[in-house]
Amino acid sequence: MGCITVTIGIVCLFTLLWSVNGIGVNWGTQTSHPLPPDTVVRMLRENGIQKVKLFDADYGILKALGKTGIEVMVGIPNDMLASVGGSMKAAEKWVAKNVSEHISSNNVNIRYVAVGNEPFLETYNGSYLHITLPALSNIQSALIKAGIGSQVKVTVPLNADVYASSNTYPSGGDFRTDIFDPMLKIVKFLNDSNSPFTVNIYPFISLYTDSNFPVEYAFFDGNATPLNDGGTLYYNMFDANLDTLAHALQKNGFGNLPIIVGEIGWPTDGDRNANIEYARRFNQGFMSHISGGKGTPMRPIPIDAYLFSLIDEDEKSIDPGNFERHWGIFYFDGQVKYPLNLGTTNSGALIPAKGVQYLERKWCVMKLSAPLDDPQVAQSVSYACGRADCTSLGYGTSCGNLDARGNISYAFNSYFQKNNQLEDACKFPNVSVITKTDPTPTVGNCKFPIMIQPYYESAGRRFGCGQMPLPLVSVILLLLLTVVQL
Image 1 (cartoon, rainbow, N blue to C red):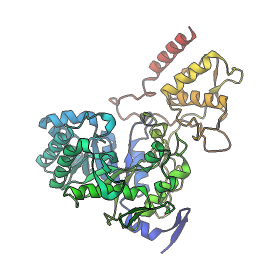
Image 2 (tube, rainbow, N blue to C red):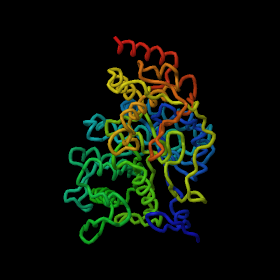
Image 3 (cartoon, rainbow, N blue to C red):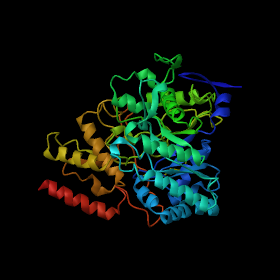
Image 4 (cartoon, rainbow, N blue to C red):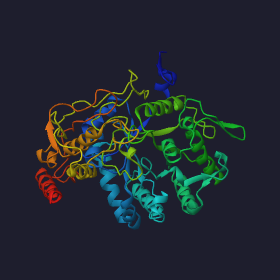
């Protein structure tokens, strides 16, 4: 029985392989340049990942997952809840197209339908409060009518803010008062249909939003001062949070309802606490923490979880924070960010995507002759960052130590790469130039990436920002820069 050494301690590989071979991952697609689905599925299989959670029901992705045996959770976006919740016919049509067809014609191992995604977030102001349960019920009925109700279960991925504690301890857990009745109805429905409760837990967010949050309590090293809940000690936030939910369920008569951790992870950029070392420490700590199958004090059973996330997504909204585009355990191109043993490979290491095709090795940077006080500079940087991704710039980020010219060059290159290195995408008036000399600093983690070649699933694929037809990009950019010059 061989053991491997990691920074957080000694983790027996045998134990990991035995107990967490069911770890899942979230596969998000809010990216300007997605990897081909076949490439990602090959990466999943080579890494021994047997469960994947999707946020929609993309045909190309589901087709690629066919005949692999990988368990799939497909998703219904929030903006579709009103449609499937308001019409049984619409629900049946959705199930027929996005579930039944893939199971019967392509042997996709679909096990769950995620109805909505965190629909009760306080920031939604109750928009989905009264349509989530009807959508859940209609989809469940449609699955039963299609003859797959025992194979495919419904669930609703909910944020951990749907419950809280009345006394700051897990034992005081109950559902939020403003959504108490809708939550109980959903919990009862899940229980009656033998479906799981899915919750997303993010210690990082607690650290991000609360400057007084004890950093060590976010991790699994046992270095934090424990929370003493009537003699039960909690050494990390994850256990305390999950048990707050367990107490809420038990308090309302549903103590045996299965729980899935739909999302858990740590970002690697975009904030001073979002970095490679913390992400490795958290994710490896989580894997080690659940490896023995002991669960939490309230739920001493193996934990069913999906890491968030598989790959970085450069088109995610950054309203919550710049870190949103950096949750992946792999970069946008499927390359490994840091050592992580999921306990699913013989080597104990992540295996990167293979056969990735990149654009030419060239970058768009600021001209050496252009003065920093050129009035075009600020406007051009604002334009580039508004349409590309500059979330690696700023205090505490991977590229936070760049000088002024480095920041400007990073912004220009981000826009240039996102637009497939179109020549006109590096024509910021008199201040930019294309170079074949890599501007990536020799020290630190800052990278000036080369974009991967664009992939279009079909003629019907919606163009993302930076994926619109190249002539149109050129025309728009030239028009806007002309206006700027005026």
